[in-house]
Amino acid sequence: MSKPGIILIGAGGHAHSCIDVIEHQGHYQIAGLVGMAHEMHDKHLGYPVIATDDDLPQLLKEYNYALISLGQILSPGSRIRLYLQAVKLGFQLPVIIAPTAYVSRHATLGSGTIVMHGAIVNAGVRVGENCIINNRSLLEHDSAVEDHCHISTGAILNGGVTIGKGSFVGSGTVIKECVKIGEGCVIGMGLSVRSNQADHSRYTGKSSS
Ligand SMILES: CC(C)(COP(=O)(O)OP(=O)(O)OC[C@H]1O[C@@H](n2cnc3c(N)ncnc32)[C@H](O)[C@@H]1OP(=O)(O)O)[C@@H](O)C(=O)NCCC(=O)NCCS
Image 1 (tube, rainbow, N blue to C red):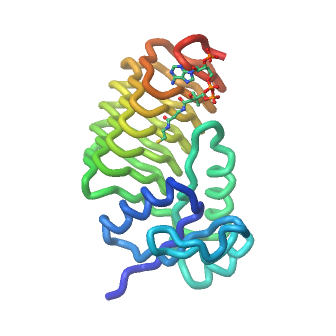
Image 2 (tube, rainbow, N blue to C red; image 1 turned 180 degrees about the vertical axis):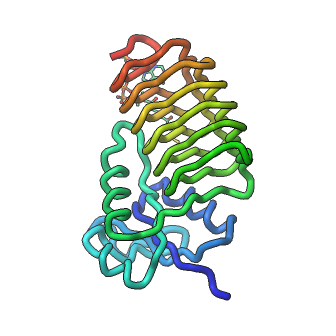
């Protein structure tokens, strides 16, 4: 039986990592990417940009599945807008888990979330919708990541950490157990975070704003 087609919404560098995970997982056939008008017909690892956001209603006639493959650092705005648009139109946004990742059977993942190579999502963890759990990140027991967050490569959330909606945690950053990061925060890479961060903080280890 042929695999269901999936379209990737977002045609930048993060899409390449998503393609690799989806190919390795093997559940879906990538039908193409959705990008900006000037990106039309570009190819990403052999897959063409076949449409822009405006064409999503048309694409739904052919494909049921979509994943938001746009990256996220300073603002979650574009990923949130595209996710809500896709859901409203009627696309199904599946959970994608790399076969190289470990997800505890005692963890939950929301729709549209991708767990990438080598990530560990341990027991009691709750991850919301439309999140990126990037390569080799570790979500320790009972931590919670709200919708539309990006936990970057190699980041570590220790037990009981909470990450508010739309926040970003940089590559290699370690968050102390039970620390609460608010909504819309940007936590830089390579840092140790030992204290709670208010909504919309930008944390670079020097000062919070
Ligand atoms: C936090 C971050 C987003 C800030 O970016 P920015 O708004 O462009 O800010 P700047 O780079 O201008 O840095 C502002 C100041 O904070 C410092 N700073 C920024 N990020 C820092 C970090 N992670 N660790 C230590 N200092 C940092 C800069 O050195 C600079 O200090 P200065 O004012 O004394 O020169 C960025 O530095 C970062 O960490 N990005 C994450 C990258 C990443 O993890 N990518 C993974 C993708 S999977």
